[in-house]
Length: 517
Image (cartoon, rainbow, N blue to C red):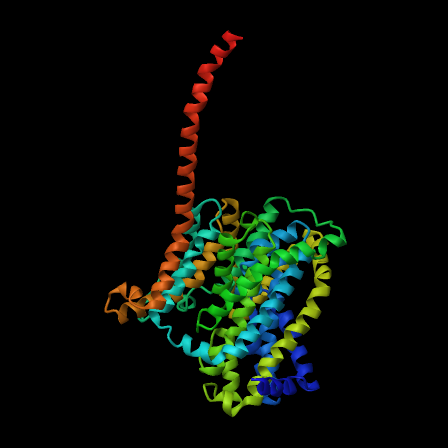
């Protein structure tokens, strides 16, 4: 292991590789800040530009774009409530609220520090556990994947605020919308209305942009707009207390992100949602989450970066992409004549370990770039909103058109913007809707496969130890909070009923005491 690390350090630390690593993370940050583009689009667009490079240099640059986008999308999520990538959707819940309270700089700094901490920890786990974790990931079949998705759906309770019924309703609406298109395992088109554009389903990125960006702009216009933030520079700087509060959520988010990142198809989006839901349950400051808490920024940001690193485990050691971006990177391997799989670590040690060690340098560059610039980025919120809103709408439309390259994407953004505006008007949470939209296709696919595997009997979920454990955890996570509230309220009622007779007896004896006096 030490020899491999030294080989990787020798490869990654060359001036050429360091330079292209810096170019990659810089481009990734810029791409991530643009709504809708995301890491998958960024890597796909710039892949042809690397064909003249050495394979290790090209892959180092493309990987830098990947995790650079994670940082960049966080910036737009926090500042203007416009996620640059789907994995940063959750960050709008607390990050944007911190920005509205004049603490945008602190939110950006916590985001950068949590990302760096998660990247370093997950990188160490990636280097040490690539082989055994890959063999464990192979044990996940349709039943285990279905149990993981059920666990993700159970976190909807955490996003429902004070009204679980509304949260469940929005999650069901998200799953229903995700069924538009060709049915999984069949060739039948559903709910398309004869539109060719809907055969592949309602595009998720466009819906996300409309819900959060356009919906927020319309909501603020209805309220008459808000005054630009006028805050002191020291309020923009992260405090020691913020760092202390972020340590535990960062560690928990890293564990969740790494565990889900190694599973093909799970991705950073599910990891960020699940880590946020866990923080709502276990954090000491859980009552503050949702209104601008440090924990609500640190946990999902750590999880999506850990998941991004962990997704390279199945990609490199099994040849199975962990997500959309790693699928594009897998195509890059093939273009360069490389075959990812168990033999890649033996046949191409210089490339593999050079790529892995470059993650450390890339994340260090991102920390140096983003941490000092956090207060500078926060100054954008000092602009009058009459100037800021047109910029948000314009970048959102450009990003949506860049994805679909047709006007249909723009109509989807506008329609989703109206839906997001109505959600805010009537106080319906958007996060459960997005979670349902993300997990709907994965849920349907795993459900069909599990049903076929069990000949129509879904009790197969309880016949395997991994799926059994995850299913039980989903039941506990979903039903636990409501049961706990019920038990607590009953105890409070019993205590009140026990106190009532004592109060009545004291009141009855009071006149006797007065007469004696």
